[in-house]
Length: 66
Image 1 (cartoon, one colour):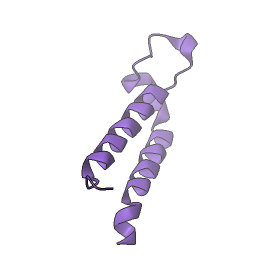
Image 2 (spheres, one colour):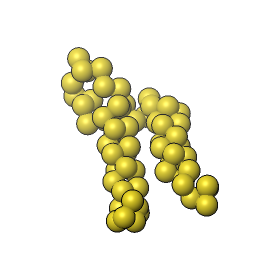
Image 3 (cartoon, one colour):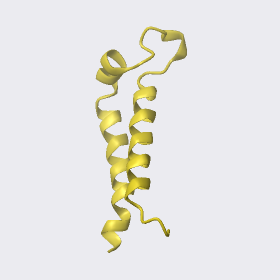
Image 4 (spheres, helix red, strand yellow):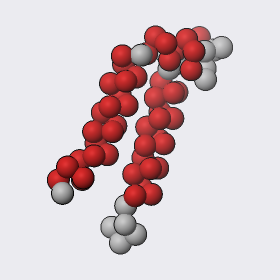
């Protein structure tokens, strides 16, 4: 049961690790703000979008009473 409760945390950590490992590729190819280098986004827009999506998935899976 503890592993089920910890799963969202592991998912978020996995997303962050994946981002750090692939940050150069994400910044060059997947970044929404790559046309605006003065923002110094470096792919953080992509990371925030992925984390938001994971949070929404987590909230969908929670029972309504919690």
